[in-house]
Length: 302
Ligand SMILES: [Zn+2]
Image (tube, rainbow, N blue to C red; front, side, top):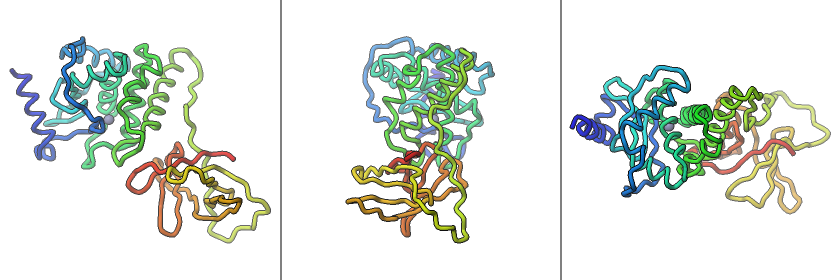
């Protein structure tokens, strides 16, 4: 009975205005189109099992839990605070369905690990809810923990492959970035276990030199620093030159159509701009528009 009341209380606060006063969710993970289905119960359907898995995750990193794990009437899973206490909430039907569609129990464990990662990383709630940078931290934590628990990289990424959106939003990074963060965490743990050196799976593009504001000496030759592909125009070749111009090549004619500049934003280290538009380039070369939609990709190298 107590559990049931608790669930109802959470449903209310998650959907209502209580949230602003008493608590809120750190990660809102509603991108999944989740349909309630009746699935055979498995071990995860028991509240104890969810807590046991949470304890195993905690044991792997050797920290004390600063949260409680509860089944709840949430769309999928969430890290929340309520009356100053931290909770990891999960919908057992969602977990079961995810485990069935991915074919691995690690999928459900990775979802819990992600939410626990929010709490152990001390993520706090902001008005906007989820933030891409925090999501990537929680993803990395999940990859780290799953490697320590014995999962393969494919197992650690199985849930995200299924549920993440291929494009970034204002709150959530694109699937590619999230899988990369999981891989980074997994590789970090793997390096600790095997003694192999840790290699970040996707190095950021090489740093851009500050653009000189004084007139530059004319360079004798133009070379290519990177290639750009825009989703809306995939067949046209775009390049970033050594003078940081964005050049479009069409019918063997090159035209300067914009400029690449370095920014002081760590999440979006570069900006592509022309007279009317600004696009942001993240550390992996993904190009996003001002509403956070992925519009293309910058790849370093000629
Ligand atoms: Zn999250």
